[in-house]
Image (cartoon, rainbow, N blue to C red; front, side):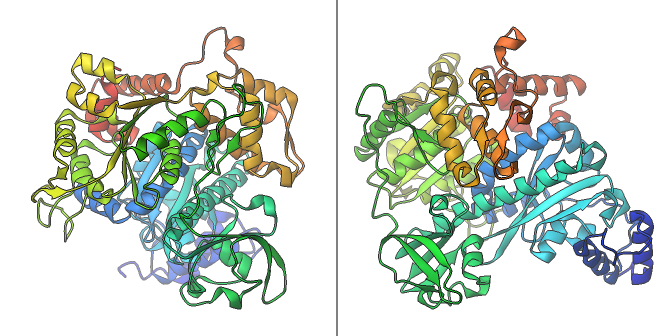
Length: 623
């Protein structure tokens, strides 16, 4: 409390001056949530002129922190990928923090990332209210609510250039798990609608994350109950989802708690029959809330007892609309047979190698195959070999024993290979695995056992699925990928087609339907649809799904989405006179520019880009 001399009255006077509100913080122009936060900061004796700088966690401590929050980081990855592109285009960044406001991941526009580091807006830094005063992350944690903090509403003067929007993430057991935050430069904000968009994007991303987490937690429980006021929303991230054992709610997403009028403390204590009338028989039915009799559409299932129906098309050309999963993957005449082959291979204990451009849905494909194969009740463990720094990849994959190295967590770490025992291990971007680890992986496949760092061999039994956007045969010829490992992987090769080679109209319709457009009366104008048809989609299905999901989320009911609503850079190649550069080509060009600016200094370039040096080294290798 070295800064205690600053009184509450002094803090509020500073707030009035900075915010330009003659009536003070009690006036309507200032959100009450900001006023409460300023009062808390003043009560702590925090000075508004204190520099917004701190010492982030060391690399080793950050690695331990990330490992502790592995589930949150893994489940948040799809949403961070989506938001990353949006914030890069807007000149900002997306953050993921834990429940104390410590930043686990940060991505975005390279220029803004560089500025943000000056106020410690970077992985390993703490952004609770105790650390940085009124700010979106800390205030969202304190209030357990969506918070947007603009410019001078930040308590610390150094942070006044920021506009930040944060939404808390709740785990399926009612505990506060962390925050997703969108941050940018308030001076670069083009309009008030940008702040509204940020609120919508953050809310939507958290709803998707919490839904996936609840669905994962429901595995192994007696019943899964899905709820919504409208039947068309069942099976989407907007539904309420509950896991029930012996009639007691054991896990739930916040949407379910809101529908039933419960708070998080009810999880593990309340019996479902006390809040819902109508019984727990399996199938689709209408149940009523016990307090008001309000009807809710329900779908009650037993986890793992049924598999997704994968049907062969009746004709060589399937003219029916594609079936879409809630995560955006589509199963049509071009992809259903590929999925069926993969399922048969896994049931025969045959490794599967997935190839395809970035964004074609490789991880979603693997999850669907896992859900429909004979090991559906066993774990599926996914590891992105390109996303984990080379120095951490070995311990992440193979595990380590207690005290194996400085910074190792107490009790050691089992490693992803042992976590996949009995199930499926999915190694994404296998072409980016360092040669030394390729040799260790080959030994695991040959011997059926894994040796943790500092430990003894342990027997393992898993099916291996790998994926890459690289030409592994060419990598073998260049000497960057082991030939003996390559031939171990390529029993069944499945190549997912890029979006430009698929029929786009049915995919657009199926995606929009999965995002709830019919219920909200949202349509796509013919001219806008034509723009989508003529775009090259270098980011493939992921790029299209992200765009449509964002457009739908930001559109009021009854909207006709017009060409003017599409991003300005969504120009077809025919209009530009040259093919649009691929997403990877644009990223490579950005890397080259940063390297030139730093005269080839890898460390400096990696800091600006917000990546590990080993990741940058791998990206510099020729494809």
